[in-house]
Amino acid sequence: MKCDAFFFMHIINCYEQDNHIVIDVNGYADTKFLHALHLKNIRENPNLGNEMDGGNLKRIVVPLEVNEKATPELNLVMIGGSKARAHRQKDGSLLLTPDNITDFSYEIPTLNPSFLRKKYKYSYGTKGDMKTTMGKFGKVELDTKEVKDWGEDGMYASVSCFVPKPGATISPFPLSKLGGTWEIGSLGGRDKFSKIRPPNKSTETLSLK
Image 1: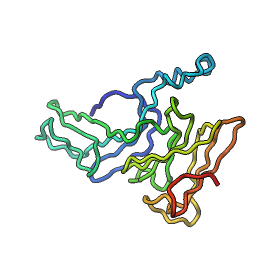
Image 2: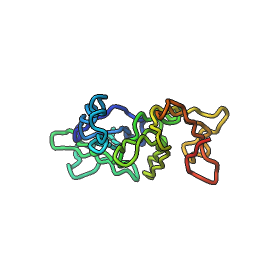
Image 3: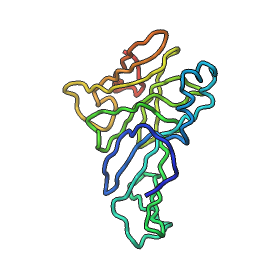
Image 4: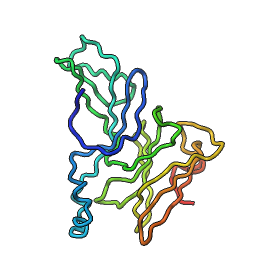
């Protein structure tokens, strides 16, 4: 198997669906942004964020059964709605093309731990767009590719953790039914923790409580 090269640090989730392996990952064109994040470089260039690759969330789908007679033109990904592609090459290898879910990465990703290694609907993380936003926290709906961001002036969200509400119904669907809280470490005038709770049934907007 092979695909166009990219750099990644975190696999968001991986699971099997309909005889395919689905891999969600934050990918980058190269590793230059790691060098850019050195403290010396940040101090010398306050506009460094404008030069950084923001990455994006990619979904790679690997079919587990490949017909040896499949032509290179045939897309072997049979999951409905997916734009990921897998083509059997003449040498027998698979050429994979990811489905690009978002325009930017959502790093240090997290999700409801009940859905690790299972089909899931939402992931959460810190937005990789350093050009127009600074450290926003985002919710990504994987099926529709809808993204909702939250942030505060002077705050940079870092590590987040989904904490399920005791006794809540486990559901991969509406956020309001997930019954949990996100604890988000953030950097601002002083380090602090923010708490985001799921919205009520009348809204899908992330809000501070």
